Image 1 (cartoon, rainbow, N blue to C red):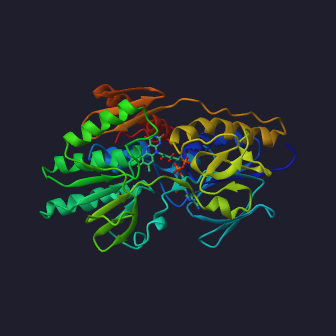
Image 2: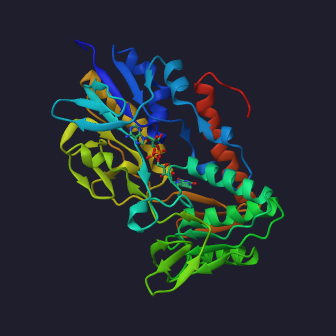
Image 3: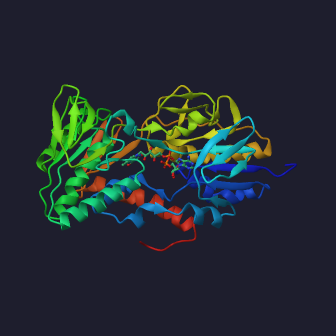
Length: 380
Ligand SMILES: Cc1cc2nc3c(=O)[nH]c(=O)nc-3n(C[C@H](O)[C@H](O)[C@H](O)COP(=O)(O)OP(=O)(O)OC[C@H]3O[C@@H](n4cnc5c(N)ncnc54)[C@H](O)[C@@H]3O)c2cc1C
């Protein structure tokens, strides 16, 4: 390599944790490596269990600064506001600018709260993103229960996240010995539409048994006062609302001016860089790989991580880049908050305590690995 390069990682997402934990390999090639993120990394895998009272918030976090600095990189706590790919420059919310030679974007996704008029500015409505919101919801409910209140809670969205959230809200109430009304609303004809029908039935039985009211075929179109209004004019009263209506790519990717699929993310090829700019890599929920419609799940960012790292190294070395091929099947495990979990893998599913044991093992091992990489082996 002839002259030093600057590699900027935007967002401490799943893929960039890995790159951060191997930053010294880029530094050894003379590169300056900088990770920019406004916050801690909160892991969604444990987040619903944290909501239900199974985990503490410290168990769910990784400190990206510690990780970067332990591996010779730099960390800037800030939010990237704009990416000027022509000038190869980033603008930060704090007012600074950063020039780059290679950029990698791993800024995740969001729930589009604005799609439900009246929701965005209502303090009783919470989105499941950022996942740290689930800790805020737990704190709020803990306080209400202690004050003798029993709020009515509605979860909007009957996918895996909404279902897990509803199950864990019920678990939290059970821990407090409170009979809290929880309603799970979906516009679909059944829960977890992407999972085998048998798994959805098992989930429904579990939630019904624990008192969660399920409303299918109900599309929420507005929040008005304490009501959620459905498109058929029906309404549901709720003091606390959690929105899990699906994940859309972080809108920052639209700001780059590079080709993007709206809501899906920056268009990338198998080398995981923009189809229009080989200096801009992207992974995880903010990226849309050509020829695939990958679900917005952490497992894909985790698998892409090593390819982004390898291809940043190859770019610095002027060598050919590796090509990532997404797996066809993936293991998804829903924590149901009652010491059981529901696992699906393609057409197969199983539920019970062994599923929960497996999820806890996989998720804790993932986080503990990064804590050890940060030089922090403390057990939480
Ligand atoms: C409640 C919940 C439970 C889930 N459970 C699972 C599960 O069990 N298994 C699974 O596979 N998937 C699960 N998912 C999906 C999973 O969370 C996402 O697919 C995953 O987080 C995407 O990872 P990522 O690496 O793309 O980004 P993330 O891990 O979301 O990280 C994005 C990072 O970018 C940072 N960032 C955002 N904007 C900027 C900016 N402008 N500048 C700088 N930094 C920025 C954020 O602070 C964040 O640290 C769940 C999602 C939710 C909401």
